[in-house]
Image 1 (cartoon, rainbow, N blue to C red):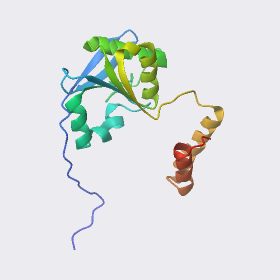
Image 2: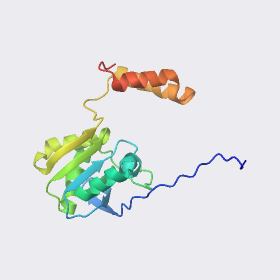
Image 3: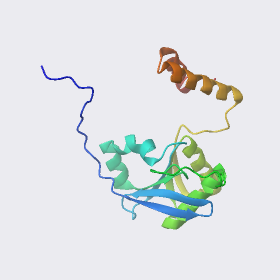
Image 4: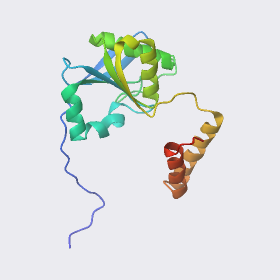
Length: 194
């Protein structure tokens, strides 16, 4: 019998995303955009959730060979990272002004202007979905369509805030326990919202 090890090695087909990172200077500060695919194809812009960048948010989709080849065959993907969320980002200085979601939505149009894009498909996750929805409402002539994953439609209530705090504490102290699983299933997959 061979020696036991705690690590496992898995061979994965790596999808060559290629691409190049750009730093776009906007009126609200610089923003990182990773572009992959043929820039002659229609544009698909992505915007991640809070505390995520394009790699941590979309890597599951892009490392799925079928999905990546389908997306890159049909689109040039422009991954927009919120300020301070790009790969290897420095800590944002306390002297830098805080940007509102409207500011972030306005940055998107400046990114489009930088790349000379007139119309785009938008793909956003949670807070990114909210920002792209604001962008679409303000600049509807520039949006061909929206793909929104778990969009935020309104500010959370105090009860929702408290509920999320309880869930985070359960996760922190007990890990992914049965009670937490039930709460998450109820929260995200039931017809009635708490």
